Image (cartoon, rainbow, N blue to C red; front, side, top):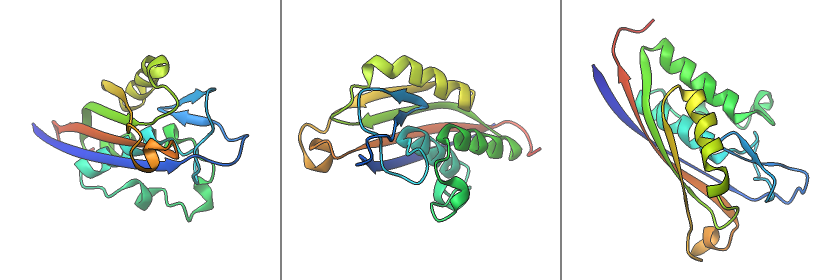
Amino acid sequence: MTFRVGNGFDIHRFSDDPSRPLVLGGVVFQDGPGLHGHSDADVVAHSIADALLGAVGLGDIGMHFPDTDDRWRGADSMALLAEVVRMLDADGWSVVNVDCSVVAERPAIAPHRQAMCDRLSEAVRAPVSVKGRRAEGIGGLGRAEGIVCLTSALVERSGSPS
């Protein structure tokens, strides 16, 4: 077996559009403004997708789902993540586990953590852990201007590509 590690990162600022929902890890949060982005701006799903793509040398999320392509406007990031997992499968890779740190002053992650882990684990077909972190008032994140997610992912290849 061959193992590889990938790292992911994504950041989005909060949107000024009061009708835009906040989606994190495939879960809609009722307690906050949405994030600005071309798709649904789910920083957690985007960060995981980047970690998985990077681990297997398939580029990054922007290469496969560019924000210059109207096909991805308003896209469900969980569907994009599922497509990334399909790409890994086609190349003979499977996800072992994923670990995410979400840095946000608001909203609180803890009340939604289990739902996020469940949705994400189902999407990648492996355990996903999510931790909420704060920026402690430092910089734009500390002023609650947006949300960032950092991800580590472990993948394995146990056979030849299908």
